[in-house]
Image (cartoon, rainbow over all chains, first blue to last red; front, side):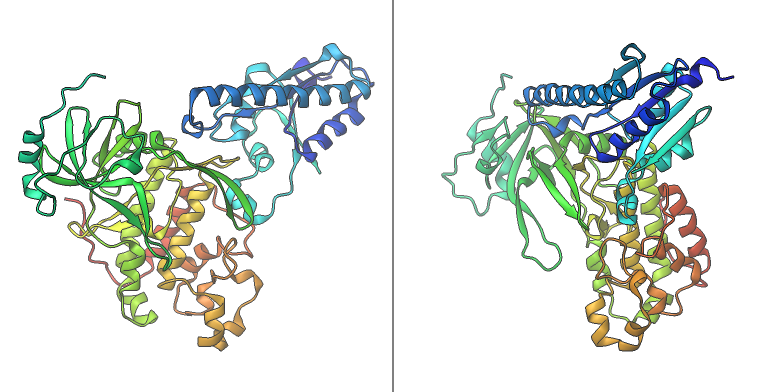
Length: 155
Length: 333
């Protein structure tokens, strides 16, 4: 028997191919099987330092543009899940704008706020030099996550 | 903002000690808005937060043997309140994509970040010191105290010893100073700030105190998962430079030390800069294993990375402890 929160899945995505594969994986695995699963598609809009923008107007244009792109992206993932058999009212989308020192920590904060039992992310397959310079979201999620399961879908 | 501008007579009087090369007919232009930094020249005056600064010349930055690049937004100034030479860093908005080892980084200059860090590190002996003000156009102008001394890179270049002598006689003390610098970066990270541009020419060896001090915190970039990853990588590169007494370049090694070159394999080079040797023990066998193991964390063959500066620092302290020599480091008073 699973608890309600264990049937809440948080899929953290971006526009990459590995995110699309993570969504497809969840769709193939759980779509149409029933079980009252609730999915949240999370796309963090990563806000830079204020100095990144030459003016407040450019900052606002950036936010509007990113929100639009994010909603388009999440709607496409939502449609894909519906096509796999999920009910539309069991899928929500979130696009918070956040300054994230660490993306994985921002994802975990969302998990804690909304009580998800499972986090799903795609694995990018970084090269060693990418890992040393950029850091790996999935590796760190696995390391830091407490009281939840992390699925890392291999792209 | 309405300012009462100082008279030409007053300015002439205040600037007299520094004006030998200016014409007696010189008319002082007083800037309260520094946006057009190209227009601000030798002999002009900045009026910032009720304080007057006489502009001298633009700063230059040289690196890797290239001609010095003039930084028009960085002015040497005389603070007319106390007569001290300082550096005024004006606001230059710059955004570009840097390619580091084939990985694109979206970079930008961030005066606010530098201002935040100046506040954070006030009184810290291992950072440049200064304050900041906003001008009439809300530009964040940083007023920096000059550090007199060489860069770490230049200091090491000027050591005319063979590597083994350098390693035993000079490196322990250099490592002590460097460890203090790494501790300073750990302090920044603990406070949620990254340096952003860690390089061997961004450490100055203070001629007065002998301390190593970080400069230039205005560089910023859009990070991904690990906000501090690039800083940590920079620290590793500086360490490799210090231990190697300069970069050990593959091409040069092939000519100067063919037997050492023959011992190298593909994994022994720097993880990003593949023309530099990271596994220095293969060239200099007296480098102790623990110190070399740190260098290997930044080599192409490595798969286990430091998560944070604390881990790097801990290994570095252990490696330093294995040196026989006791360094004669001038400590903080």
